[in-house]
Image 1: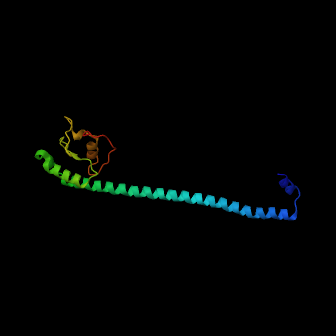
Image 2: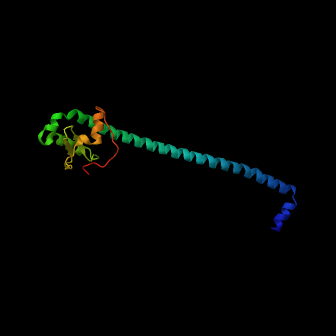
Image 3: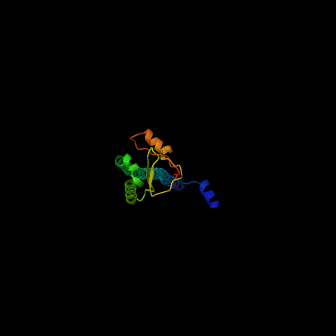
Length: 161
């Protein structure tokens, strides 16, 4: 410790040059280190945000495609299902169409339709509670209200489950 104090108290030209040389070397290194750290942090943050945006965009695209397929199926069924299909004994043709659709679309839990007369057809078959009338359900009333448009309801527990 005494040597360091002596060294500082008695500056010589060589000591001054050594200190100046050290400052000249360390100052730019410190500045470059700070700038590099800031730039790297900013670049990493940008990359993380870009990656997150790409993931969200891909997820949105997947959801849009899935919903579009379901909308196409709804349009198809709205064109194919006529009033006489509800009057058919046992609604056999409707049940067959729904069964075929469910087999081809494993992500579909149930396919169902209802009429204003209170007829309800679902695949897979589920015994509905006595007095169940689809025309009284919010999904039916909203569909009638927006005639010709596809509606998407908020999730809810169905009467079948």
